[in-house]
Structure formats: structure tokens, C-alpha cells
Amino acid sequence: MSDHVLRLLAAAAIVGVASMIKGTIGFGFPLLAVPLLSTIMGPRMAIPVVAIPTLFSNFLVIRRGGAGGLAGALWTVLAATAVGTVSGALLLGSLNPRLVSGLVGLVAILYVLATALRLTLKVSEASVRQVGPVFGVLAGLMGGATGISSPLFASYLHLLRLEKRQFVFWITMMFFVVNIAQIATYFRLGLYAGPVLTVALLACVPMAIGTVAGLAVHDRLEPRLFERIVLAVVFVASLNLMVRSLL
Image (cartoon, rainbow, N blue to C red; front, side, top):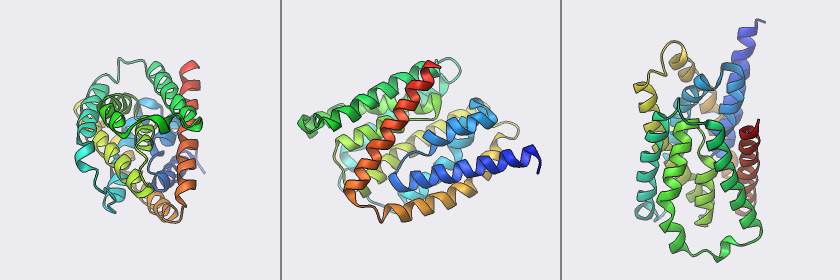
């Protein structure tokens, strides 16, 4: 078996596993897929490649519903996310991704530690909603520049104390906004030239399989276990971002 075929199989496996995790807890696809695929094809190709199957994965999750009564409260966060994403994508070549990753990782780790110490229980819902646009802009910048925005999104929605179906719906809706702005900007910058678009479209096959499997697992998770998994993934992912920023 040629080295090229092995690389394609490895990439498909990465996409399948990462999208299954995304289907289970609502995030984790770019978070896992971008750094792992970067070892195969480089970050400048991995980021736009992952963006397209992520968009379709988000669509599969959103169509299941689960918004609850939060649409009016979160529209400002979605708008701020769009602004941040376009800005981050335009700055893809000039921002220091290690610095951005390190800062986001630090913020998310501090949130997980505050949750473990039960400090987040003292934060009022009104205060959480007021800082929503700030989270949106920062997460959008991170998503546009590096393809990864889930630590901030997950931290913010966890702070709102949503039940698991609402959590998955709204974090996916935020990713959906990021993806649309992200992909449009990447096309404008010519990042889908050559084989990049073909690889991105082929990646949608293992993505679909993984996402559907993850949604089935999600439906069987107990709420308390779901919350612990979310915090654990945020912590590990954020720690990884900080380590990568120092290397």
C-alpha cells in the first residue's frame, strides 16, 4: 500500500473519529481534526479542508432542533461571532496562531478550574448574557484565524447552564455562523485552489458517518455525565492549545 493511500486512510479516520465526538457532545471536530490533519498536510491546507465538512456536520446537528426559548437572547452572540470570524480569517496570514491559541487555552482552563471550584455558580445569568458578545468576537477571531473556537463557545454555553440538547444545538449554531463566514472568506482568499476543495468534499463522507454515530451516542448520555465530558474535553483541548503555543 502506497504512502499516499495510507495518508488518505489516516485522514479519513481522523475525520470520522473527530466528527463522532462532535456529534456526541456538540464540539470537538476542528479541535481534534485540525492539529492531527496538520501533521499530514500542513496547517495552511488542514484549516480550509476541515471547514467544509464541519459546515455539513453542523447542518446535520441543527436539523434535529433543540433551540428551546433562547433564540432572542443569543442573536447578539451570533452576530458578534460573525464579525470576529471574518476578521480572524482575513488575518489568517498575519496573526501569530501560537499566541492566539495560548491565550484562548488559558481563558478556557481558568473557566474549567472556576467551575470545579464552584465559582461559576455565583455568576448571575444576566451577567453571563451581557458578556456574550465578547465571547462571540473572541471565539470568532479564534475560529477564523486557526479553525478552532470550541473552548470559548463551550465555556460560555456551559456558564448558561443549558440542558444537553440545548447546549449541542446552540454551540452548533455558533459553529455554523463561524463556518459560513470562514468558508466565504477562504474562497475569497483563494485557499481552495488546487486539490484543497476536492479533499474537503471527500472528507464529508467519513464526517457524515461519524456525526450520525455521535448523535446516537448523545441520545444515550446521562446529563451529568454529559456535563463532565464537556468540561473534560474543554480542559484537555485548552491544555493542548497552551502546550502548542509554547513549542
